[in-house]
Image (tube, rainbow, N blue to C red):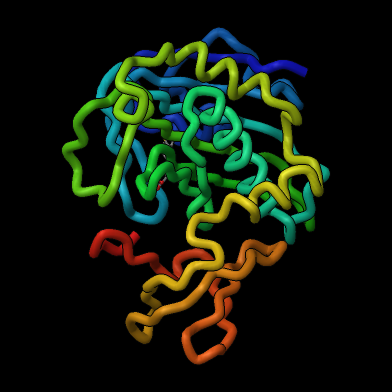
Length: 254
Ligand code: BTN
């Protein structure tokens, strides 16, 4: 099975673009049968007017400089309680793709930010639809900083491939390398270990913040459901779901 790629000049958000097509909103006319089942789609925009990050964050991306795209896949074999397998799959796929360009270690900051040398090069926004106890479909939005040289938003620590390499990179070739990576959809077990081996700060004592304030802890593992497992300075085990704990990086919360 192959990807159907739709390249558009401008939209508010590629995640929203895919969702509105699915709901039948007539916001953009496109000559493709989006509803044909099991067709994997990739929607790429040169510019997003309202690019979304996780939670209430926005996603900054200069027009025509980076990769901002969303995938629509049907990982119907993935049980709802293993939704995190999609984060594992896409995070590892991005790391492996970036390692074809740079020698630096590419790491995953839990749950799914892609980091190089302590800076964020890519962010992922996953929105799943469930049917019973399985996933029906998944929209995976990816913002990958490719050729942007200057970042204007207050995002704490962005970096682009161009800044790391010292030269621009062909965005289309980069996208093709990512999409050609196998497996095409999450497959249980494949990326589980690689995800955990690439965890940013794993085994290192560092500072975090939860609802009770700052504390120091060491990341030990990630549970199959995606919860982060840490051990604090007092030797107590702590488990956190997404958004329950923040990393303190360069005096910012991320
Ligand atoms: C994050 O790190 O907070 C997630 C960022 C995800 C950004 C991408 S860009 C393509 C897709 N469309 C969006 O509006 N957001 C995602």
